[in-house]
Image 1 (cartoon, rainbow, N blue to C red):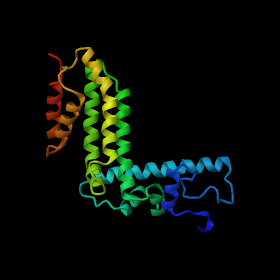
Image 2: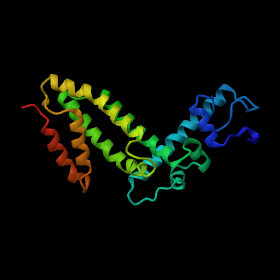
Image 3: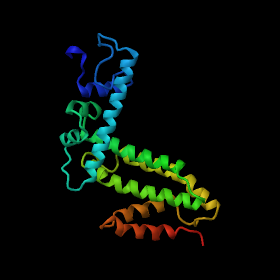
Image 4: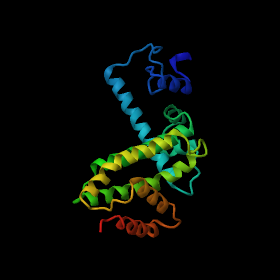
Length: 219
């Protein structure tokens, strides 16, 4: 480990165990030249920007059905070097899981920030956002299944988080009698997932989604 630079896999393994490994891949205990506070902050900011660039490039690449998405291609699209890419994501699976978790975080956050005139409209707006999430995550999930299986905790935890985020919206809409009370959020999400899998262009699926969600209204 000459020069204080760790092997990426070793660094990540230590970081998972709670040891203070710098995101740049250097061992803080072996570093001979301590960073000034301003320099350390700049390094962290650069690392965050690099990670965001990688995630953005990977998300766009996996959404492109014509793209051959290799790690080298993601590095090229993001404008970072291969070493930077692998410092952030040691394996393709690590990158795919991060993309899935990021999408889940966005849809869960939307549950508490979406604004609309009624509780039923808030629920419907969030379900539209969930449909977008399903559409975005499909290529990532399909690719991830090549490296793991459907029993992977990342899939189960994602579903649980989405349900926990959406349940308050459904309860509020039911209490206001804006939506029918005989279907669960599990069933509603399964319906949306099934619609997202229908072959065809987005403008073909959208009226199907709108019709299905209109059927949730209380009569």
